[in-house]
Amino acid sequence: MPPEALPEAPPAALRLDIDRAALAENWRALDRLSGAARAGAAVKADAYGLGARRVAAVLREAGCGDFFVAHWREAADLLDVVEAGTISVLHGPLTGADSAFAIATGVKPVINSLEQTRRWLDAGGGRCDVMIDTGMNRLGIPLAAIGDEALRRLDIDVLLSHLCSAEEDVPLNARQLALWQQARRHLPHRRASLANSAGIALGPDYHGDLTRPGLSLYGGIQREAMRGSIGQVARPAVALLQTRTVSAGETLGYNATFTADRTMRVGTIALGYADGYLRCWSGKGAMLSAGRRLPVLGRVSMDLTIIDLGAAPDLAEGDWVDVDYALDAAAAASGLSPYELLTLLGRRFAR
Ligand SMILES: *Cc1c(COP(=O)(O)O)cnc(C)c1O
Image (tube, rainbow, N blue to C red; front, top):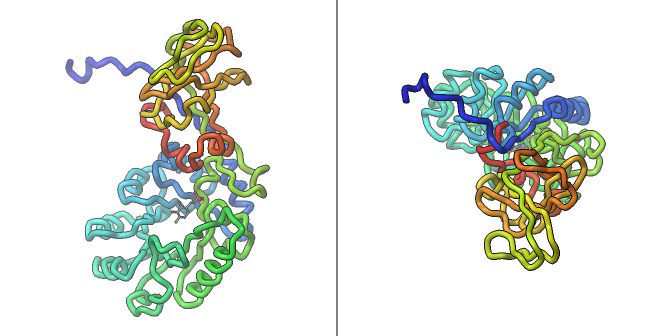
């Protein structure tokens, strides 16, 4: 078929509803909780799977002026959504092409090593952010290296470090705070930043000039102090493809892991591990319909899952149900982290 003759694709049988008002309200709450500091936003990994372009547009409108992505490609994808100078690339420049892209666009690299420092300066340099390692030993310039003369030649906007355990009350938090403060005294910079979502709740000492929430923007609550302020943003929903009645003794799905002990009405939904609804939900997850719980029965398969329709006799083929996906409870039930729960949701969801 010539392209102009192609019909539009039919709607998906999977939907990820994004509550834009809740997203904006979460950012405003985190900005408030950040006290004298402003809140930025971690929108890496496609805004934790919610759609970085959509999320960045909502947050920019709400007043957010700093966006953190991991990859250069993720920055390129946002250039027509937010001002280039408000985007920072956490992985930093790995190649000359990365530096050239930063210089041509105005996107800021986050410099993570002395090698990256030299690469950036050799390319011509300019405004950048710098990540100092205060204990993660993942990315960042070791504190022992902050006397290096190359660092003095950088034009540092945000001096950042990253907390390992902000959601826990452990001595490592205070140790990282002290090392970050030491770095702030040694390296000239415009703004300083330490706290991720959970770090915001550690108090004003941790706020600096800019905080970098990610998970809590999208509804994750890792500290009780935030519970009243953060609302659910992502709501997956799925279509019911078929219903059937099974008799006592019949089994359901792969490997026959579930056997009906009575006559049951069950439904098959268009959701499986290819969509990020992993096998760990087998026999544990549930769908929701008008407040009624519809438990997952047997194994989750690649594209399909079977649910118990006992509580919802009115539901029929073509109806939609919500996935029970309140992040806290879903994390506890599945054993997955709330970060995984969000970033897993696959490309077949219409967002
Ligand atoms: C992902 C990330 C964040 C956001 O962390 P959350 O725990 O999701 O709030 C902040 N800073 C850096 C460096 C990150 O990589």
